[in-house]
Image (tube, rainbow, N blue to C red; front, side):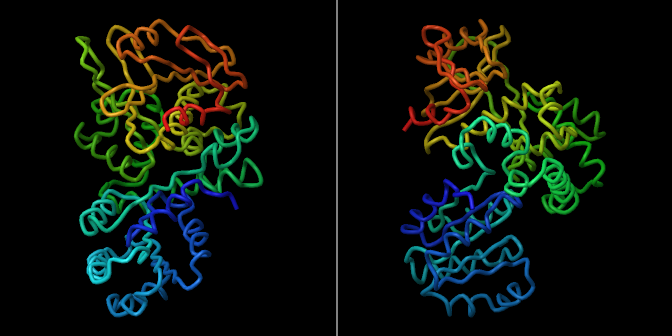
Amino acid sequence: MIQRKIQKDIQETLKHFPVVGILGSRQVGKTTLAKEIQKNKPDSIYLDLELPSDFNKLKEAELFLSSYQDKLVIIDEIQQKPELFAIIRALVDQDRKPARFIILGSSSPDLIKKSSESLAGRIYSHHLNPFSIEEIGNDVKTIDQLWLRGGYPDSFLANEESLSFKWRDAFISTFLERDIPKFGIKVPSPQLRRFWTMISHLHGNLWNASKVASSLGVSPPTSKNYLDILEGTFVVRQLQPFFPNVKKRLTKSPKIYIRDSGILHTILNISSKNELLSHPVAGHSWEGFVIEQLINNLPIGYGNYFYRTVAGAEVDLVITKGDKPILCIDVKLSLSPQVSNGFLNALEDLKCEEGFVIYPGKEIFPIRKNVKAIPILKVQEIIRTLV
């Protein structure tokens, strides 16, 4: 059992909120985490709404849940029965004590909207990400495995590379054939896979709606809608550009990343580290992997962007506090990383006092007066500077 970093945060939130949500994509470990939390509350009950027996228990949901008002009720896959949100709200309003419900759901735009609207002021939601470096250990071999396989538990913990690859391939097929149609994309699975493959080839690059739309035979707004849905299911990240108050021509399109590196590699048919390092996507894959490690561990109140000007100034990740850039981060797949003039110009534009270059080595060393190389092994040290 790998201890999830978010578990302590959830247990603390349960002391203050009547409803706690755990959202995340399928197979990310929500059920396992909920059952670990349940061990500390032995009188709680657990319902999995994908099981007919548990689903049928909630035919008379108000009556059933009222009989457990003194116990924690964990409801898994709540999106299977969306009318429960209104019933939970009514029950909570009758008794606002903390730790009444934990609700788990496979992330979707509709689920997030229903929970935030129906349970406003009553719920605190946590998003469970795939495994992070902090959770699995920060030695070189383990990090390489996490980068290649991604952080979905069944993929990362598989006994062999081939089994990990097969699991991810099956996950992608299920996602395309069963999950995405529920989110409003009514097109055949082969076309969805083609869209998914296009997104993978755009990984780490600017979004080009017209180009993607032309290839799919749809309108640019439709292709953007598809992208937004994938972002809403937490499998794609749209990293937005940062717009400081400078008189420069700035890039306005977001950069696109497949959030889990293992899923990216499977779509591109990359099954080993040797194949990955020789593939044109290697640098962008490493960039996305590092950016996810940072963004997913930012403290509350910090923003994340990229910065690029037409003149060539560029930063892979800008971490902000309010409207102010705090840290400028570049990512290099090199054991002897250097920074470009574009990065140095961006530091000057953004008035960042310090810049970091994250690379796959082992040592911390200065590159320039205000720029330091940080190995991926010690990436958490950057986060700690913000706390």
